[in-house]
Image 1 (tube, rainbow, N blue to C red):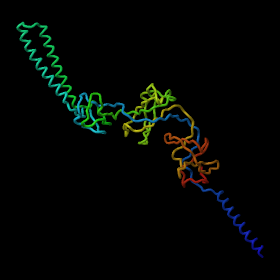
Image 2 (cartoon, rainbow, N blue to C red; image 1 turned 90 degrees about the vertical axis):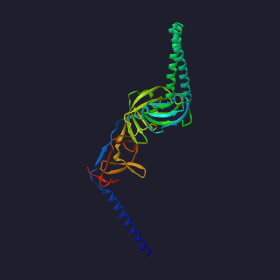
Image 3 (cartoon, rainbow, N blue to C red; image 1 turned 120 degrees about the horizontal axis):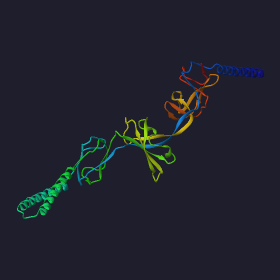
Image 4 (cartoon, helix red, strand yellow; image 1 turned 60 degrees about the vertical axis):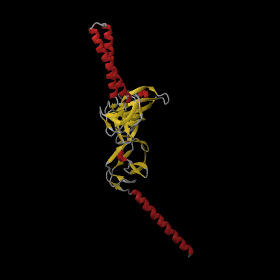
Length: 341
């Protein structure tokens, strides 16, 4: 009796397993049906530009160091970093003590020279001196006049005027500091003439020429701008063995001096696979696409993507030429779906 019961239980378990197996097989033979995918693409090899990428900094092509022509203590600085400056605007005042003393001395010398000239003029009229003696006195008077004008010019330099329009990007001295000729007090830059300065490896410099088009990415803006190689300095840095390249920008919108930039110099062509950005599925940190096989069944496939080229992405791994990529289907794509042609 016990044997008969054990046999009955075994038969029931086998029946249940067989039923489950039949359900699973039936599910795989009846895939979900999707409407026709809105996007589909058969991958082929495409020629794309190959770039050498270098880092650089946005700077102004017109950078001016403001210094005083007059030695003296800085009495007042009228601008701060970031201020917009116009041509002729007063930037700072220098205490003109020495210049004032020089002007006083020059005026005193002129007064003496004028008195002597008048005296010699009377003597010349009386034939008491020769014309040569009078000419020497007259020359001293003219020199004294010139020295007064020079002292007046020096005194005018106590007020430092901006020679250009631009933005104050650096202030190297403060009120009370001693300024001297040639020592920068302020640094101005013209924001309307920006360029990118970058250094290029000696292995690629022979492929870069003035006038070449360059793709410039401003990292903080997450935007690309068009640039043109304006200058290639034909002398490498002794330490890094890299060459300075200056790239002028075609657009200045939202770009400011000091921003970090990446420059892409075209060095040739290469073949690669490209897919639309809209075909990419990102989930749990994984990047994938859906591909359709010969039986029109959708399959989820992980891929590795490279650089962005316009509205497309480069595929580095996971796909091959001839693969049929699909996207934008309703309902949402899933592995095993039947795609209507």
